[in-house]
Image 1 (cartoon, rainbow, N blue to C red):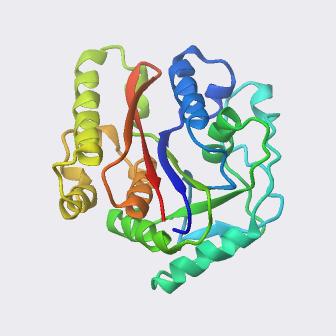
Image 2: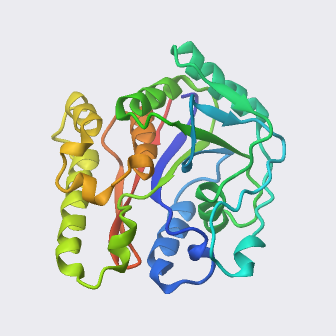
Length: 269
């Protein structure tokens, strides 16, 4: 990276509920607001969202991408949310170049809009929508090593004061949020969160071992219980791949009564 860069992995909550005043998201909303206030205002934001998968890494390249209301069953106001931030085609081109220079086949999409994995947290963090944004997709393969490699490729990205957000969820077992017998489920949730915190925050773990743990994340305690499908975890792999160091801050929070985590890295050229 050229210049300063903040990299954060966030747990973004359930659809538009953080913007609709849901009390189960109040702690998460506060955590995002505190994160934003604790960082210098970025010149641009790159979001890797759990809600966009493509055959190859794909980057939004439009000047004014529309919003994609990629959720259902919510009240009318959920489909009237606005976040009119600009795109940043120059940043999109630089991301594409960084990936292709690393041997990763990628493409840009000038028509694709912003999904709720992007606009919900950013509306909480930067409500004035004054910062240009770009989204980067996951790969449909959902291969952990591939997403670590995408992050490592982005280490060469040249953009000063960039904020990178991996937008997912450290716990993403939807039925567990509504279980009538939560005690055992909460223990499994807690065991995985403990493993994830140790993996990302421990100074006693080498980067080679950290890479191995994240590559084989399914070996973690109750990994597949917490992530029956891994799309909400993999934005973390891209974030770690960019930083390739222990995080500067692990931020515990709760979402709808379940433990969740956010991680922050500060990278200087």
